Image 1 (cartoon, rainbow, N blue to C red):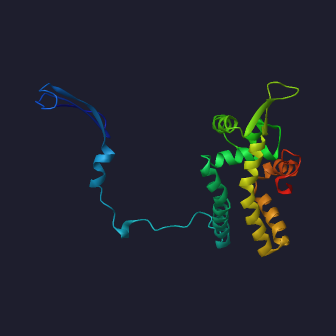
Image 2: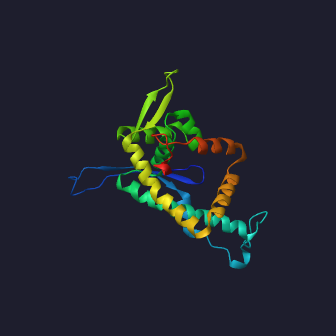
Length: 225
């Protein structure tokens, strides 16, 4: 066996060992090069510093009032449960949340440009292309050329696509209806204002326009069907 020295952190070991092997009829066997990461070898040799020598845990810089942490965590838990019902439906057909987002906005905005959908979702063209292809191949979305610019790609939900979008939205409508019944319509209006204020200021006008203009394929919003 011969070892070749390399900079600390790695060892390249190469050995040719001839031995008699019952399974291989006594033929010589060559052991190939193997890379060994020294971090994997040496980790057991490290000694943990005594507790007295460890730096004390510190709160984040510019520590915020507890109510801000409450809002962060409430938003997490609310979203977790809000999305759980559609997640279960999506799992039945082998789709995920990316399919849900694409289908939702296409269903609400017939004739949506691919470029506008990319701007809404803030994802790469490659990521959208994979999801969009599956939705088109399975008959939930169709893609058409623009009437004045054939290079444009306009997206429309099919009848099956609109039906699935509504099926995914219904449990979310019910969750909101239950919340409004528990807190009152005034709180619902305040929640809308609060959520809009959380949106990046540079995006608020576009989001407001999208909310105002979003319509289903039949010219009605999903909650009006």
